Image (cartoon, rainbow over all chains, first blue to last red; front, side):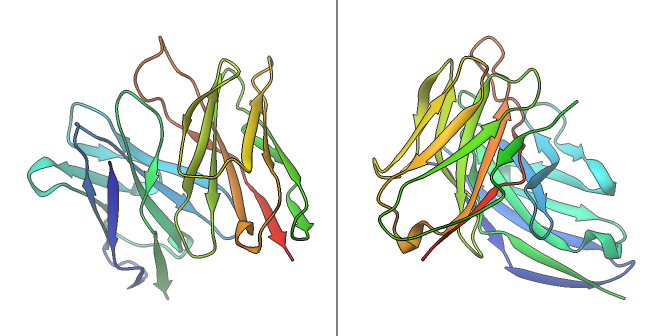
Amino acid sequence: AQSVTQLGSHVSVSEGALVLLRCNYSSSVPPYLFWYVQYPNQGLQLLLKYTTGATLVKGINGFEAEFKKSETSFHLTKPSAHMSDAAEYFCAVSKPSGSRLTFGEGTQLTVNP
Amino acid sequence: DAGVTQSPTHLIKTRGQQVTLRCSPKSGHDTVSWYQQALGQGPQFIFQYYEEEERQRGNFPDRFSGHQFPNYSSELNVNALLLGDSALYLCASSLVTSGRDQETQYFGPGTRLLVL
């Protein structure tokens, strides 16, 4: 079975500060990893994904994540937070052979002016 | 290019009733997955449809059933509604290339179901 743990249900940063959202996964096979963002009363929007190849993945809105197999981690970062980044962020894992996504519990990001 | 659409946006039902939610996939996609997102939680996988058949199923009771039509759109049916079925129901579409490898799932805005 696959699982995802997101450390910190709430993260608060100042505008312009580094954003770091943590995600650790468990998988018996090489995983595919995803970060999605959810704004209030909306569906999920894909930020970035890792399947194979380069372990540093760049996504939309200046976000990036690094796949670290030895640490079973896929942390999401952004060098400088913007007010518009305030939202809930979900890390998800799937198997390469199937497209079922297993999500973490989410991290609510607050950006303070 | 239309994205994933879902209807209705909101729905209120009472315990014991039945509900049908609808999803139209992104243009060119052939696979539809359904997820339940309870308040304050991450989405939970219900099931996935491909070629009009249920391809995978999560840990949900038989009260949850679905269908995929020849045009790839899909319905989620829930019978004998319980208070605990209140949630945001998300539909996601993807394209399975050659029957292998994960393709990105694109999510719709969801249907918010309230069971009283």
